[in-house]
Amino acid sequence: MSKKRPDLSTLKPETRIVAAGREYAEHGMVNPAVYHASTVLYPTVKSLHDESQTYSYGREGTPTSRAFETAIATLEGGHDAAVFPSGAAAISATLLAFLKTGDHLLMVDTAYHRTRKFCDGLLKGLGIETTYYDPLIGRGISALIRPNTRIVFCESPGSQTMEVQDIPAIADEAHKKSCLVFIDNTWSAGLYFNAFAHGCDVSIQAATKYIVGHSDAMLGVTTCNKETWPQFKEAYLLMGQFAGPDDSYLALRGLRTLDVRLERHQRNAMTLAEWLRGRSEVETVLYPALSNDPSYQIWKRDFTGACGLFSVVLKPTSKQSVAAMLDDLALFGMGYSWGGFESLVVPFRPHRTATTWTAQGPCLRFHIGLENTDDLIDDLKQGFARLKKTS
Ligand SMILES: *Cc1c(COP(=O)(O)O)cnc(C)c1O
Image: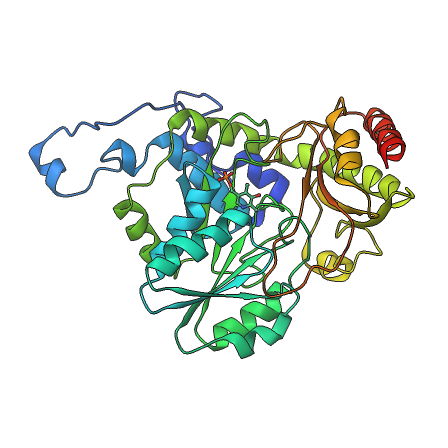
């Protein structure tokens, strides 16, 4: 673009996601090219040695990956970001970048199940101890911080059960004791929760979800503040992390429409959540945007919106009747991941060690897509009729 670039830091998030990273487009194109690259050529021996060239090797970044990374860092309000081949890769590698043998990690009890597995497996094997903590701990986190605690890891709302954490309180206590605060910010897509403004040092997202937004690519991204960026970037390069150019491009393309998609996901999810709340088969709906949700106050204080992902606890019923309900749904697919244009549902049992899950009935996690909500409700009505018939 030959025109003057706007100062994005002064603009609203909706404007930033449209404008960010566009400086990597060339020849007047709106979008950057998809650079498939390994070797990058140098014009002279001098340029080979003096590290003056912006791009040095495919794995270390291309205009396509930099456009995506710059756009995410701009969206999140961080210093800079780096792309990974999946959300799980971003979480694992970012933890490894800051932890060493003998360190202690505080991990939220409602972490994504793979994050838990990584802590209980690979980190444990390296002599890095993890303590799980109640997502609603707030300032109480202070009592769990030891001299060797390096990181307090948050995920808000929590995976499956949707507890919203008091991040400013946790970050305040963690920083008093020189701990870093990481967050898995996937639920908000970086648009509805500003992790850095609320005290986080590092924000990680499974871009696989809403940023890609179409269930057709996997990608992770880690955004750091200025202080954590150098240590993170060095480890990122040492671990040989990168992601393919087509996936980075798809994520950048998804990002441009994030705001309009999320607005509809949110509206549809609210309609479905309210409808489900009124059903006699439902014990509770776990969605922070509902005004009677226990997390509503903190969500309203810290978030600017809600995505299409929430859970419900059914009244106690048999496994067979849940299967009868779900197996024949026509519009709700059954499967992992979420954030695409389509509606999904999966049954789950919360796995908790620092807290106790007391609800008796089976749990379902819904992702509400962009379909018409009347059609979605009809599909679920028929599902509940099957549940009733078999229970
Ligand atoms: C899906 C998910 C991940 C992992 O992302 P992948 O791209 O599937 O590896 C991490 N955290 C949360 C909250 C997720 O929902």
